[in-house]
Length: 358
Image 1 (cartoon, rainbow, N blue to C red):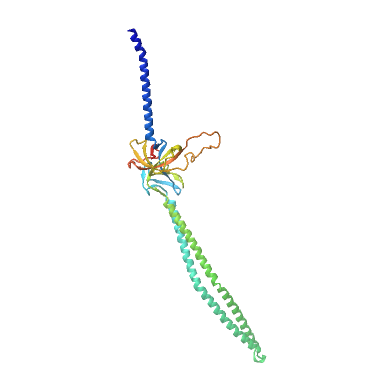
Image 2 (image 1 turned 90 degrees about the horizontal axis):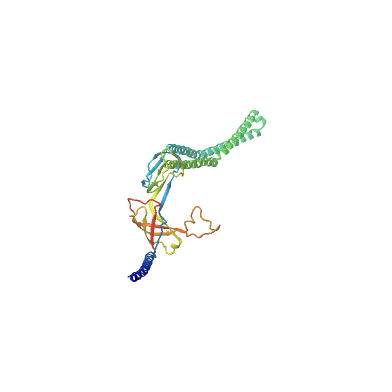
Protein backbone atom coordinates (compact mmCIF):
# COMPACT_ATOMS: atom_id res chain seq x y z
CA UNK A 1 0.00 0.00 0.00
CA UNK A 2 2.77 2.30 0.83
CA UNK A 3 4.49 1.42 -2.45
CA UNK A 4 1.42 2.41 -4.50
CA UNK A 5 1.11 5.67 -2.61
CA UNK A 6 4.73 6.43 -3.30
CA UNK A 7 4.30 5.69 -6.98
CA UNK A 8 1.26 7.96 -7.21
CA UNK A 9 3.07 10.72 -5.36
CA UNK A 10 5.86 10.52 -7.89
CA UNK A 11 3.63 10.47 -11.02
CA UNK A 12 1.26 13.33 -10.00
CA UNK A 13 3.87 16.16 -10.26
CA UNK A 14 4.98 14.86 -13.63
CA UNK A 15 1.37 14.86 -14.86
CA UNK A 16 0.83 18.37 -13.56
CA UNK A 17 4.00 19.56 -15.26
CA UNK A 18 2.88 17.99 -18.49
CA UNK A 19 -0.54 19.64 -18.28
CA UNK A 20 1.09 22.98 -17.52
CA UNK A 21 3.39 22.61 -20.51
CA UNK A 22 0.50 21.68 -22.74
CA UNK A 23 -1.50 24.67 -21.46
CA UNK A 24 1.42 27.02 -22.11
CA UNK A 25 1.88 25.54 -25.56
CA UNK A 26 -1.83 25.96 -26.25
CA UNK A 27 -1.73 29.55 -25.06
CA UNK A 28 1.32 30.25 -27.21
CA UNK A 29 -0.37 28.77 -30.25
CA UNK A 30 -3.52 30.73 -29.48
CA UNK A 31 -1.56 33.99 -29.05
CA UNK A 32 0.30 33.34 -32.29
CA UNK A 33 -2.99 32.67 -34.02
CA UNK A 34 -4.53 35.85 -32.60
CA UNK A 35 -1.47 37.89 -33.56
CA UNK A 36 -1.43 36.36 -37.03
CA UNK A 37 -5.14 36.99 -37.44
CA UNK A 38 -4.77 40.57 -36.24
CA UNK A 39 -1.87 41.14 -38.64
CA UNK A 40 -3.83 39.61 -41.49
CA UNK A 41 -6.87 41.76 -40.73
CA UNK A 42 -4.92 45.00 -40.20
CA UNK A 43 -2.11 44.63 -42.73
CA UNK A 44 -4.13 46.64 -45.26
CA UNK A 45 -5.27 49.25 -42.77
CA UNK A 46 -3.67 52.31 -41.24
CA UNK A 47 -5.05 53.96 -38.13
CA UNK A 48 -4.09 56.59 -35.58
CA UNK A 49 -5.60 58.06 -32.44
CA UNK A 50 -3.91 61.42 -33.12
CA UNK A 51 -6.77 62.81 -35.22
CA UNK A 52 -9.25 65.62 -34.68
CA UNK A 53 -12.18 67.29 -36.37
CA UNK A 54 -11.05 70.37 -38.22
CA UNK A 55 -12.63 73.26 -40.11
CA UNK A 56 -12.46 76.96 -40.81
CA UNK A 57 -12.93 79.59 -38.13
CA UNK A 58 -13.37 83.06 -39.62
CA UNK A 59 -12.35 85.95 -37.36
CA UNK A 60 -15.04 88.66 -37.36
CA UNK A 61 -13.61 92.18 -37.12
CA UNK A 62 -15.14 95.62 -37.84
CA UNK A 63 -13.80 97.87 -40.59
CA UNK A 64 -14.57 101.11 -38.76
CA UNK A 65 -14.12 102.26 -35.19
CA UNK A 66 -16.98 103.18 -32.92
CA UNK A 67 -19.28 102.32 -30.05
CA UNK A 68 -21.29 99.11 -30.29
CA UNK A 69 -24.94 100.10 -29.87
CA UNK A 70 -26.64 96.79 -30.72
CA UNK A 71 -25.64 93.13 -30.42
CA UNK A 72 -27.72 90.64 -32.42
CA UNK A 73 -26.08 87.26 -31.71
CA UNK A 74 -25.11 85.05 -28.79
CA UNK A 75 -22.41 82.42 -28.39
CA UNK A 76 -22.74 79.10 -30.23
CA UNK A 77 -25.74 80.18 -32.28
CA UNK A 78 -26.18 79.43 -36.01
CA UNK A 79 -26.30 82.36 -38.42
CA UNK A 80 -26.91 82.75 -42.12
CA UNK A 81 -24.82 84.77 -44.55
CA UNK A 82 -25.86 88.42 -44.30
CA UNK A 83 -27.35 88.17 -40.80
CA UNK A 84 -26.61 91.17 -38.56
CA UNK A 85 -24.03 90.40 -35.88
CA UNK A 86 -23.66 93.81 -34.23
CA UNK A 87 -24.10 97.49 -35.06
CA UNK A 88 -21.72 100.40 -34.46
CA UNK A 89 -23.13 103.87 -33.70
CA UNK A 90 -23.86 105.27 -37.20
CA UNK A 91 -24.35 108.96 -36.21
CA UNK A 92 -20.80 110.25 -36.93
CA UNK A 93 -20.69 108.31 -40.20
CA UNK A 94 -24.05 109.73 -41.30
CA UNK A 95 -22.71 113.24 -40.61
CA UNK A 96 -19.56 112.50 -42.63
CA UNK A 97 -21.67 111.22 -45.52
CA UNK A 98 -23.89 114.33 -45.45
CA UNK A 99 -20.80 116.56 -45.40
CA UNK A 100 -19.33 114.71 -48.39
CA UNK A 101 -22.63 115.03 -50.27
CA UNK A 102 -22.69 118.79 -49.58
CA UNK A 103 -19.10 119.17 -50.81
CA UNK A 104 -20.04 117.36 -53.99
CA UNK A 105 -23.00 119.69 -54.54
CA UNK A 106 -20.79 122.77 -54.05
CA UNK A 107 -18.21 121.48 -56.53
CA UNK A 108 -20.89 120.69 -59.09
CA UNK A 109 -22.36 124.20 -58.75
CA UNK A 110 -18.91 125.75 -59.15
CA UNK A 111 -18.31 123.69 -62.27
CA UNK A 112 -21.64 124.79 -63.75
CA UNK A 113 -20.63 128.42 -63.15
CA UNK A 114 -17.17 127.86 -64.64
CA UNK A 115 -18.70 126.16 -67.68
CA UNK A 116 -21.01 129.16 -68.18
CA UNK A 117 -18.01 131.46 -67.96
CA UNK A 118 -16.18 129.37 -70.53
CA UNK A 119 -19.10 129.59 -72.95
CA UNK A 120 -19.26 133.37 -72.42
CA UNK A 121 -15.55 133.76 -73.07
CA UNK A 122 -15.80 131.68 -76.22
CA UNK A 123 -18.63 133.96 -77.47
CA UNK A 124 -17.64 137.45 -76.36
CA UNK A 125 -13.86 137.34 -76.73
CA UNK A 126 -13.86 137.00 -80.55
CA UNK A 127 -16.51 139.73 -80.85
CA UNK A 128 -14.48 142.06 -78.65
CA UNK A 129 -11.39 141.42 -80.75
CA UNK A 130 -13.30 142.11 -83.98
CA UNK A 131 -14.63 145.37 -82.53
CA UNK A 132 -11.12 146.44 -81.47
CA UNK A 133 -9.74 145.70 -84.90
CA UNK A 134 -12.58 147.65 -86.56
CA UNK A 135 -11.95 150.60 -84.25
CA UNK A 136 -8.24 150.48 -85.12
CA UNK A 137 -9.07 150.55 -88.84
CA UNK A 138 -11.40 153.55 -88.33
CA UNK A 139 -8.84 155.50 -86.33
CA UNK A 140 -6.17 154.80 -88.92
CA UNK A 141 -8.50 156.18 -91.61
CA UNK A 142 -9.04 159.31 -89.49
CA UNK A 143 -5.30 159.48 -88.94
CA UNK A 144 -4.69 159.37 -92.70
CA UNK A 145 -7.23 162.19 -93.28
CA UNK A 146 -5.67 164.29 -90.52
CA UNK A 147 -2.21 163.77 -92.01
CA UNK A 148 -3.48 164.85 -95.45
CA UNK A 149 -5.20 167.92 -94.01
CA UNK A 150 -2.11 168.93 -92.08
CA UNK A 151 0.14 168.40 -95.10
CA UNK A 152 -2.18 170.48 -97.31
CA UNK A 153 -2.36 173.34 -94.77
CA UNK A 154 1.39 173.28 -94.40
CA UNK A 155 1.99 173.41 -98.16
CA UNK A 156 -0.25 176.45 -98.75
CA UNK A 157 1.31 179.88 -99.03
CA UNK A 158 1.19 181.93 -95.88
CA UNK A 159 -1.27 184.38 -97.32
CA UNK A 160 -3.60 181.50 -98.37
CA UNK A 161 -4.06 180.15 -94.80
CA UNK A 162 -3.93 181.26 -91.24
CA UNK A 163 -1.92 180.20 -88.24
CA UNK A 164 -5.08 179.02 -86.53
CA UNK A 165 -6.00 176.66 -89.38
CA UNK A 166 -2.49 175.21 -89.38
CA UNK A 167 -2.61 174.66 -85.59
CA UNK A 168 -6.06 173.05 -85.89
CA UNK A 169 -4.79 170.63 -88.56
CA UNK A 170 -1.77 169.80 -86.40
CA UNK A 171 -3.99 169.20 -83.35
CA UNK A 172 -6.33 167.00 -85.40
CA UNK A 173 -3.34 164.94 -86.54
CA UNK A 174 -2.08 164.50 -83.01
CA UNK A 175 -5.55 163.48 -81.87
CA UNK A 176 -5.75 160.94 -84.69
CA UNK A 177 -2.33 159.55 -83.74
CA UNK A 178 -3.44 159.14 -80.13
CA UNK A 179 -6.65 157.42 -81.17
CA UNK A 180 -4.70 155.01 -83.37
CA UNK A 181 -2.36 154.21 -80.48
CA UNK A 182 -5.35 153.66 -78.16
CA UNK A 183 -7.11 151.44 -80.71
CA UNK A 184 -3.93 149.43 -81.27
CA UNK A 185 -3.60 148.87 -77.50
CA UNK A 186 -7.23 147.76 -77.40
CA UNK A 187 -6.52 145.22 -80.17
CA UNK A 188 -3.51 143.84 -78.28
CA UNK A 189 -5.61 143.62 -75.13
CA UNK A 190 -8.40 141.80 -76.93
CA UNK A 191 -5.95 139.55 -78.77
CA UNK A 192 -5.55 137.22 -75.71
CA UNK A 193 -8.43 135.09 -76.93
CA UNK A 194 -6.57 131.77 -76.68
CA UNK A 195 -5.27 132.52 -73.20
CA UNK A 196 -8.71 133.54 -71.93
CA UNK A 197 -10.34 130.39 -73.28
CA UNK A 198 -7.48 128.24 -71.92
CA UNK A 199 -7.89 129.75 -68.45
CA UNK A 200 -11.62 129.16 -68.51
CA UNK A 201 -11.13 125.56 -69.67
CA UNK A 202 -8.47 124.98 -67.00
CA UNK A 203 -10.93 126.14 -64.34
CA UNK A 204 -13.52 123.67 -65.63
CA UNK A 205 -10.96 120.83 -65.57
CA UNK A 206 -9.89 121.80 -62.06
CA UNK A 207 -13.48 121.59 -60.87
CA UNK A 208 -13.87 118.24 -62.66
CA UNK A 209 -11.06 116.95 -60.43
CA UNK A 210 -12.72 118.42 -57.35
CA UNK A 211 -15.98 116.72 -58.31
CA UNK A 212 -14.19 113.38 -58.75
CA UNK A 213 -12.55 113.82 -55.34
CA UNK A 214 -15.87 114.76 -53.74
CA UNK A 215 -17.54 111.70 -55.29
CA UNK A 216 -14.77 109.45 -53.97
CA UNK A 217 -15.16 110.98 -50.51
CA UNK A 218 -18.91 110.46 -50.70
CA UNK A 219 -18.44 106.84 -51.77
CA UNK A 220 -16.02 106.25 -48.90
CA UNK A 221 -18.38 107.91 -46.42
CA UNK A 222 -21.22 105.73 -47.72
CA UNK A 223 -19.06 102.61 -47.36
CA UNK A 224 -18.08 103.57 -43.81
CA UNK A 225 -21.74 104.08 -42.95
CA UNK A 226 -22.59 100.67 -44.39
CA UNK A 227 -19.73 99.07 -42.44
CA UNK A 228 -21.31 100.16 -39.15
CA UNK A 229 -23.48 97.05 -39.55
CA UNK A 230 -21.25 93.99 -39.21
CA UNK A 231 -22.87 90.99 -40.88
CA UNK A 232 -22.03 87.29 -41.22
CA UNK A 233 -19.89 86.66 -44.31
CA UNK A 234 -21.25 83.11 -44.66
CA UNK A 235 -23.30 80.46 -42.89
CA UNK A 236 -21.91 79.04 -39.67
CA UNK A 237 -21.92 79.16 -35.87
CA UNK A 238 -20.82 82.04 -33.67
CA UNK A 239 -18.07 81.15 -31.17
CA UNK A 240 -15.67 82.99 -28.85
CA UNK A 241 -17.72 86.20 -28.82
CA UNK A 242 -15.77 88.86 -26.94
CA UNK A 243 -17.81 91.99 -27.71
CA UNK A 244 -20.73 93.45 -25.77
CA UNK A 245 -23.08 96.35 -26.36
CA UNK A 246 -21.33 99.48 -25.14
CA UNK A 247 -17.81 98.34 -26.07
CA UNK A 248 -15.65 100.56 -28.25
CA UNK A 249 -14.19 98.59 -31.13
CA UNK A 250 -11.41 99.40 -33.56
CA UNK A 251 -10.80 98.32 -37.17
CA UNK A 252 -9.32 94.83 -37.31
CA UNK A 253 -10.19 94.01 -33.68
CA UNK A 254 -11.29 90.38 -33.32
CA UNK A 255 -14.76 90.38 -31.79
CA UNK A 256 -15.91 86.78 -32.43
CA UNK A 257 -15.29 83.77 -34.63
CA UNK A 258 -17.54 82.17 -37.21
CA UNK A 259 -17.14 78.40 -37.63
CA UNK A 260 -18.19 77.39 -41.14
CA UNK A 261 -20.33 74.29 -41.77
CA UNK A 262 -17.60 72.43 -43.65
CA UNK A 263 -15.89 69.97 -41.31
CA UNK A 264 -13.14 67.49 -42.09
CA UNK A 265 -10.68 65.36 -40.11
CA UNK A 266 -6.99 66.09 -39.75
CA UNK A 267 -5.19 62.85 -38.89
CA UNK A 268 -1.54 62.96 -37.88
CA UNK A 269 -0.11 59.68 -39.16
CA UNK A 270 3.40 58.52 -38.37
CA UNK A 271 5.86 58.96 -41.19
CA UNK A 272 6.29 55.19 -41.53
CA UNK A 273 2.55 54.89 -42.25
CA UNK A 274 2.63 57.12 -45.32
CA UNK A 275 4.12 54.62 -47.75
CA UNK A 276 0.74 53.26 -48.90
CA UNK A 277 -1.42 56.28 -48.12
CA UNK A 278 -2.80 57.86 -51.29
CA UNK A 279 -5.65 60.30 -51.99
CA UNK A 280 -8.99 58.67 -52.61
CA UNK A 281 -8.64 55.76 -50.19
CA UNK A 282 -11.74 54.99 -48.12
CA UNK A 283 -11.72 55.83 -44.42
CA UNK A 284 -13.95 54.68 -41.56
CA UNK A 285 -14.03 56.96 -38.53
CA UNK A 286 -15.35 56.94 -34.99
CA UNK A 287 -15.75 59.99 -32.78
CA UNK A 288 -14.94 59.72 -29.08
CA UNK A 289 -17.64 62.23 -28.14
CA UNK A 290 -20.36 60.34 -30.05
CA UNK A 291 -19.65 56.59 -29.90
CA UNK A 292 -22.73 55.76 -31.96
CA UNK A 293 -21.68 58.03 -34.83
CA UNK A 294 -20.00 56.14 -37.66
CA UNK A 295 -18.44 58.35 -40.29
CA UNK A 296 -17.28 57.45 -43.77
CA UNK A 297 -14.88 59.47 -45.85
CA UNK A 298 -11.80 59.42 -48.05
CA UNK A 299 -8.22 60.63 -47.96
CA UNK A 300 -8.11 64.06 -49.59
CA UNK A 301 -4.45 65.01 -49.39
CA UNK A 302 -1.21 64.64 -47.46
CA UNK A 303 0.43 67.78 -46.17
CA UNK A 304 3.80 68.62 -47.73
CA UNK A 305 5.59 68.86 -44.43
CA UNK A 306 5.46 67.37 -40.97
CA UNK A 307 3.70 69.05 -38.09
CA UNK A 308 7.06 69.78 -36.50
CA UNK A 309 8.22 71.62 -39.64
CA UNK A 310 5.33 74.09 -39.43
CA UNK A 311 5.31 74.52 -35.66
CA UNK A 312 5.91 77.93 -34.12
CA UNK A 313 9.24 76.80 -32.66
CA UNK A 314 10.63 74.08 -34.94
CA UNK A 315 13.37 71.86 -33.53
CA UNK A 316 16.96 72.80 -34.37
CA UNK A 317 18.30 69.35 -35.24
CA UNK A 318 21.64 70.76 -36.36
CA UNK A 319 22.60 71.73 -32.81
CA UNK A 320 23.27 69.64 -29.71
CA UNK A 321 22.73 65.91 -29.40
CA UNK A 322 20.31 64.44 -31.93
CA UNK A 323 17.67 61.89 -30.97
CA UNK A 324 15.62 60.55 -33.84
CA UNK A 325 11.89 60.95 -33.27
CA UNK A 326 9.26 59.51 -35.55
CA UNK A 327 7.54 62.50 -37.13
CA UNK A 328 3.83 62.85 -37.76
CA UNK A 329 2.41 64.25 -40.97
CA UNK A 330 -1.11 65.76 -41.15
CA UNK A 331 -3.47 64.01 -43.57
CA UNK A 332 -6.75 65.67 -44.57
CA UNK A 333 -9.74 63.31 -44.58
CA UNK A 334 -12.99 64.53 -46.12
CA UNK A 335 -16.21 63.24 -44.51
CA UNK A 336 -18.54 61.75 -47.12
CA UNK A 337 -21.39 60.40 -45.00
CA UNK A 338 -22.56 59.70 -41.48
CA UNK A 339 -22.95 63.27 -40.21
CA UNK A 340 -26.08 64.08 -38.24
CA UNK A 341 -27.51 67.41 -39.53
CA UNK A 342 -29.12 68.00 -36.13
CA UNK A 343 -25.82 67.51 -34.30
CA UNK A 344 -22.95 69.34 -36.00
CA UNK A 345 -19.45 68.33 -35.03
CA UNK A 346 -17.50 70.94 -33.04
CA UNK A 347 -13.90 71.48 -34.04
CA UNK A 348 -11.17 69.68 -32.15
CA UNK A 349 -13.03 66.46 -31.23
CA UNK A 350 -10.92 63.31 -31.01
CA UNK A 351 -11.43 60.96 -33.95
CA UNK A 352 -10.04 57.50 -34.72
CA UNK A 353 -9.75 57.03 -38.49
CA UNK A 354 -9.02 53.70 -40.16
CA UNK A 355 -7.80 53.92 -43.74
CA UNK A 356 -8.36 51.03 -46.15
CA UNK A 357 -5.01 50.78 -47.92
CA UNK A 358 -6.14 48.36 -50.60
